[in-house]
Length: 347
Image (cartoon, rainbow, N blue to C red):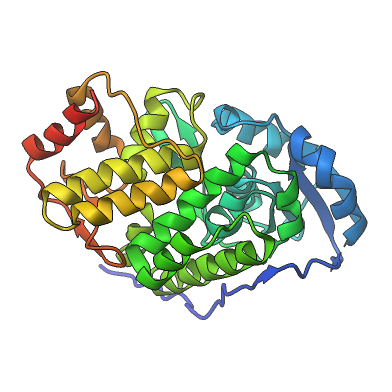
């Protein structure tokens, strides 16, 4: 006996990413802002003044990647219940990628799903983490292995918020911009080589270009069944780096920078990237003081960690590699010995 469940697929989950257009938000429901003390000190009062709701509350969680775990999720959920939120309530993620990922995850599971919006306050979150609906937390097994796809109902990127960023946090965001340029847009990469995005006008151009690139990719492949996986260029290596250093030594973008360098070494050996191109990418990362070196303790252990990556399948590791600057290849049959050769170069 077979019973078919016919589900309506007409729900439109489209939303807008607005740059420097946050002038006021009005809701006829309860709203909770989720943030951390660092962000709250600089931006919470301003954002609160722009939000009108039947009731507005704030949940504050500790700052840092090490708190991106299920324990923090349980705390946020507990606060939501104490505040008597319901299925019409809305969450606002005010902060960087960690805040956005966790707020989105809570929104996806609280009473089986409520609305949320993103107000990213770091460069990394504005150009990457806040767009696309990936939510989740880390575990001892790896980064973002617990989570969901839950699209926000809007994203508001205010470049003025970036003025309070430490230079290291700013540079971490640049790594994600470089990632997209190397794999999708050679002209944009060359523009980055010739412009300093620490300049305010150049920064706005870089943010807009990065968001448009990611939006196009997400529109084609919302749940990462194909081309969206390319946005993980550098991340397969980076996630192992973060796990090995217990999310304490490197910011996410710094680990991505290291991962890009490692991926490029592999692409170089496969003949996908020229030495000249490999050097150009390194120079661009170094231009913003991003790390390009990492000491691998054990190439064998590092390699085994790859199998906890979400892109691995049937005991095969899918590597996202540049195919010259501006192109990409997804390869899942690279010989183990070749990958180990690359890793041993970093021992």
